[in-house]
Image (cartoon, rainbow, N blue to C red; front, side, top):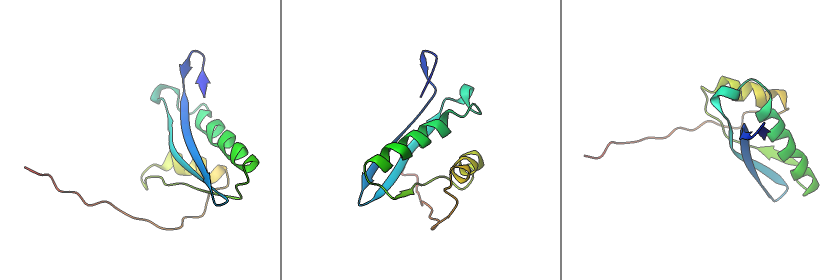
Length: 91
C-alpha cells in the first residue's frame, strides 16, 4: 500500500485448501494509524475470496495490541492457540 511515493504498508498471503494465511503485515512506523495495514489486509482477503478461500488465519505477537485491534475490527477475533519460542545464546 503506497502512501505517496513511499511504501506505507505491506503484507502477503497464501491461499491453500480454502484458507488464506496472512503473513508479514507491517506498516512504516511514521505512517501508523492511517489505516494502511487495514487496507492491505482487506485487499488480501478480497483477493483470497476470489481465489476460493473461505477462512483466514494469521499469527501475531501477544503484546502487539495494535495489530490485535486491527484484526479484531476486520472480523479476526477468535484466538486458536498460543505458543512461545525458547532460545539460547551460543558462545
